[in-house]
Length: 165
Image (cartoon, rainbow, N blue to C red; front, top):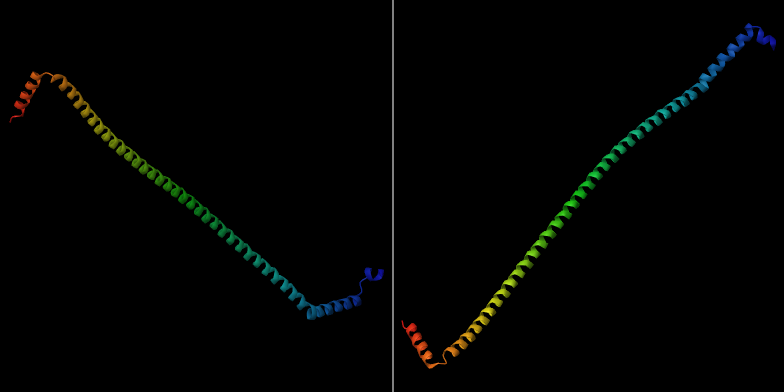
């Protein structure tokens, strides 16, 4: 065995070369095509996987952009709803204030009308009482003044003079 390793033999070299070439030819005829096919298939599957991963990445980016747009739209819609709710609440409050003012004005005008009518009634009653009181006072004065017949006569004459036209 030492001899095979240390010494060069042309015959052995020839047979080894012949076996190697035969083996290469056999591999080329029977194994090379399946090996290349499996390598090509593997290469194609890797390319397809990379392409699929790239499509998935692009789709994820697209979905992320859509999600961002949806979020922006949702925020805008929320802000619009909040503004609309605030406007509606302000409108309701303003309407309630106006209604309260109208009701208050009605109540005030009704109260003023009631006060004025009661005032007129009180003034009329006071006039009647003053008139009654005046008549009673005049009656008492006339009775005391007209106890005397001469005074009665003089008063009647004065009244007749005043009543002549």
